Image (cartoon, rainbow over all chains, first blue to last red; front, side):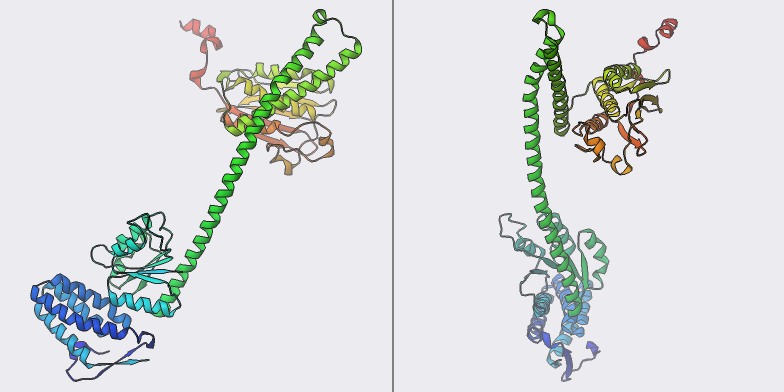
Length: 108
Length: 401
């Protein structure tokens, strides 16, 4: 399994996803792209509770779609938000952005 | 079958909607919060159209109200309580399962949801819901039928009570005038032998009808639950003697001997005296009817510490074991040629049982086929404070004074 912390920009990450989910995976990934903006915006407001909820939601959904890395990032965001750890949140959000750029979904 | 998904994550809702639709569940709706679910279920507006939800998939952690509490409120609504709820949990939320099951959840499924597991759990929950609905419907139909039958039975009882009540008055008149003619020839002029014989037949028949009407009145009283009791403490022996005296003519005609066996110092019984005599009279009458010529009947009474027990034993044909459990049923008669010859409606023991039970007693039968029968009953011994000590122990009381 890919450790999301090791992802480098430009890397190609192939994620195999159940073909049944072909229609809804783009929506899911689109929502994560929106999460990036929302987390950054919440962070600028200092709204850690919003980040915690977002992280919790990412954590819950990622695995179901086959993106375990997103689940892990969600968990990190949730914990960091509870601790008020800005640095960790910023780092995780940028890793999420990189991850979304690098993945190539392969429906199986 | 329709399914409601409750989850604050749009991605989870999309995922579960998709998985369920792929499984052929086309009627799937979703709510992003407990409140929205309540609205969809019509919980906030009783006049709302029932969405006919057959299953709920409930997320645990949601803002405002969590899934466990939502589950509790849904289960508290009578209209919704039969909808099975499957909790959708992450591995961390497993610790809330205790509460979720206590709130009425029937199952849980772990996130991330595997489509085969989802299919299996949803399928089994819906099968259960289907079965519950089927039983509920059958139960409602039975209830409805039961109500109809009860109403029919009440109507019959009322008709019976009113008919018997109406029969009673002319019957009393017939019996009264016949008695008058038979017993007071001095006032009404002498009867010739044939007139006397015929009137005796009329009197006997009218007494038999009177007994039947009284029995029917008792039955309608029993079934309406309004038997009046006048309970007091009284000695048993004089009552046994009284009943024996009333049966004396019948006993003599059949050459049946009657013995009374009561120990000295038997404590008084706590019962309705007239009803006590009626029970005992009915048992003696039965024993007499089914005794062969030359047979004998024993009336025995004793105290067992709490109750006064009375037994009537005869040397008649007895009651087969298979019939012993049914002799106290209404209209039950043993189906034997020698019994069919003897008149009776099969209500005597039914009435006796109710009269005993309504006074807090019990009744039983003991018999060996062909070797006589014993029917007995127990009624409470009079409580100490109910005893008239002056009447019972006048000498001691005087001595103490």
